Image 1: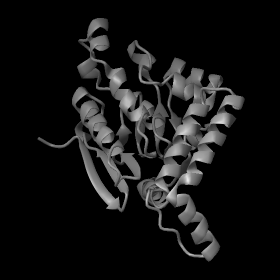
Image 2 (image 1 turned 180 degrees about the vertical axis):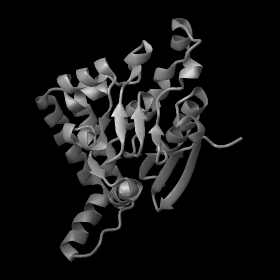
Image 3 (image 1 turned 120 degrees about the vertical axis):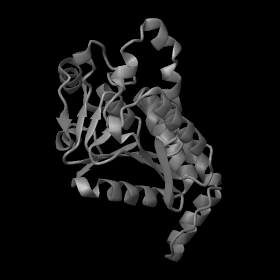
Image 4 (image 1 turned 45 degrees about the vertical axis):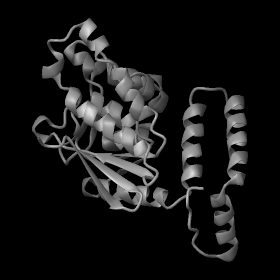
Amino acid sequence: MTDLVLETRPFDGVVLLTINRPEARNALNTALRHELTDKIGALGRDDSVRCIVMTGDNKAFMAGADIKEMLPKGTAEITQSNVRRLWAIIADLPKPLIAAVNGVAFGGGCELAMHADIIVAGEGAKFGQPEVTVGVMPGGGGTQRLLRAVGKFKTMKMVLTGEPVSGRDAFEMGLASEVVADDTVLPRALEIAQRIAALPPLAVRRIKEVVLAGEDTSLAAGLMLERRTFDTLFDTADKVEGMTAFAEKRPPKFTGR
């Protein structure tokens, strides 16, 4: 049986997950969903992993949920499938996650990309939430994460019309971290991942936690959390190494302690 998610380690501390269902434009079916979340859950617990990149192929990052699989299902079956638990595994990943997006990222594909911490988009990429065109609505964060990323009016246009936006438009509206030429998307994402992997993993993890927590709290509460978390990093060996290396004008060697 062909793996639906290919796992490689191109650099020390960096894992590349490649969605491998090209015959269906990488559409998200139950088997792919389980394989992807199983791998991400395991990588989150692996201390040797410092950053994860996920990508598809040149035609599709992910073309959305598998409509043929969803068609016969009713409300009870969808509810019992407990899809939200699987999305939560990706949302709770403690390591930085980078989405390298070429081709289409529609529906569940756009939602999957929005679970990442950094999105590198190709000029030819297309992001969209077309669920309304088949009689439903986004169900994996496509209304809420999109709203927080780009605001009410751009979100409403995308989810009410189902019309996609280009990689360039996604970048300009705040839905992507960078937009680059299509053939440089994955190299650029891996370059960013390699840089993150060389940095102190405890500090990286705490930064991710505080930024995500701050999305849903007041400024005062977010600043308090930031300050207290900042203080805890002063008891780490990596803080001593980082500051000592800076003073000695040499590259630091971070150990995650």
